[in-house]
Length: 326
Image (cartoon, one colour):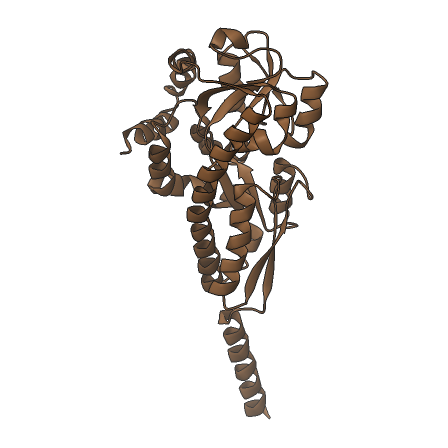
């Protein structure tokens, strides 16, 4: 009897061990974001879902909830933290509230050009920053191209920093973004993306700042007829997974998800380039005046932001590493 019981327990233990190492049954990951379904990021995510299903042999797929169906960027991050949502897309500007070192990516005029930003994000610096939020149950998987952010306004164009004096400019819930607008003479006003159109209409703010596709797809061009391409920040989006989900996946499943995410980056960058050109042409047809101001006065006026980082040796070291990246 004792031998029988011992054998039974051994079999049960072996079966438990095998089941722990086996890939679990089919998983559908819930991904929510605030973008329109015609946005390049949403399209890239759709393809990512197809790729994940293919890579995993049908064991994993993605269900997407666009257009703020499940809340704002910050609210989606909070849902990830409690395990009620698996994945989301947020701007680095919002992510910095949960991963403080990421605020370095929101510094104005940090990158030399687009390729320089890709080299930083795809390299050791970018990959290291993706893990900065894990202590808050948030892990970055990859970066999506979100182009350059510029000012768009209702009443008058922005040709120089002086033109921002007295203007209320909508910004994300980002200390870095607020400091940037303040240093240029504007009055930063944090408002959620979903409330911005109405806020512009009602005069709660005089303008905002974002990339061309977001300006176009949000229809903010219906209210703001001046778009000044000072391109003050190259602020990427981040695809974020909750550690509740990530830690529940075995190594093989994690590898599948990361591979699908990496594939989506290449796809999204191509889609983005096309959508940026399309957006600028479309808003011009709708009567928006595109302004190409001299960027040098803007860059000089925000230098004070960099001076404040000299006291923080770790952050200033990251800034120097970014500047020295080829």
